[in-house]
Length: 196
Image: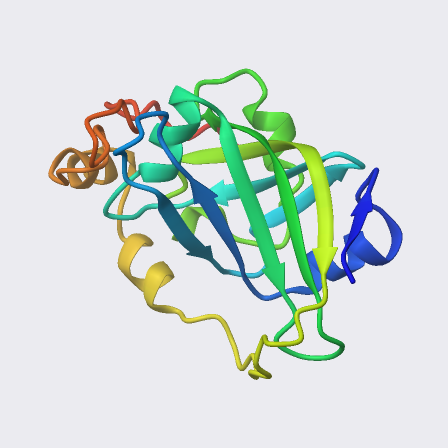
């Protein structure tokens, strides 16, 4: 039923790029640490960079568990499900790294996301994931669901923020600079957003 792949290309790449959402899973090293599972949406906010590397935009939110876990140990699994068409689930297990605004790689990486207006969403990092294991499974139990459109609530909420007010927003949240388990999260204060 399931198959392991050496690279993300062809049908597999098309499948990943066509999905309207995906999920991320991370965990701290501590045995009693909080496992985090997050849905990610907004079309155009993820990209296949090469045959073994994917990336997605990490937008404003009320916590930064994924960022904290990646900073501690780098382990991450990404999962895409087919909610329409033939049943399929694709998982990319690998090592991830949050690339922050002041990183020299930022300008090159942001170029992989031409179809989304990042100024509307409080972009705080680009998460780059290097695949160690790429698998698909049948997805027979995944329900059919229709994709109507991205919600506009996130853009409406964060489009009114500039770097200073966004930094203040993050500083006011209990689990942005520090994770639920006390790990370092998003480095504050935020560096300015580089020009595109």
